Image (cartoon, rainbow, N blue to C red):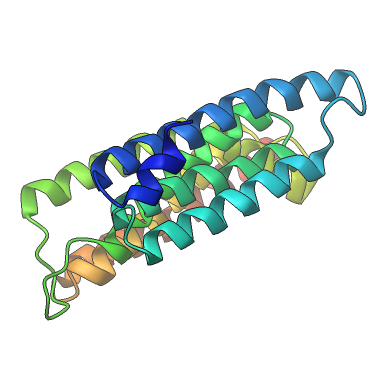
Length: 214
């Protein structure tokens, strides 16, 4: 209830940012519980309410960022919270999948929006870049169930262990491409390693297909 007062006063933007993040997290957790119960009892919490709160939360965050009531980092984080929540509408393990998608969004997209100086050049420290790579690796690993569900939805069949390993390797290469493209454009082996990971996922998927036929 204190959030409108902080927004109207225009003071303490850090406190406003913290309250906006807390509001998004609380609404999301409560809504996940309601929607999970609605899956068992139809009509309890319809899907359009999940979409409505996500859209309204995203619009509110955009307006607050435009008015400079919150920082751009808060705006980015809150957008990831609201938009990743939509995963619960389309994936079987909705609650888990939405948080896995949130981890992916917060690990893959920061190189596109942060770590640049006033001239638009990269000012990403090499050691912090390594931390970002490790976080991306963790996010991709945590999202293995998300990739499993998407694979089943697209193919209609259950993947083998080698298929999942190939998908994870390829997705890791895709997830690291923004970091390599935006902050290490002159380092050729950075892009080459990403492409190698993407291409390396294909043979891994074919190994089990070939061995299964023998």
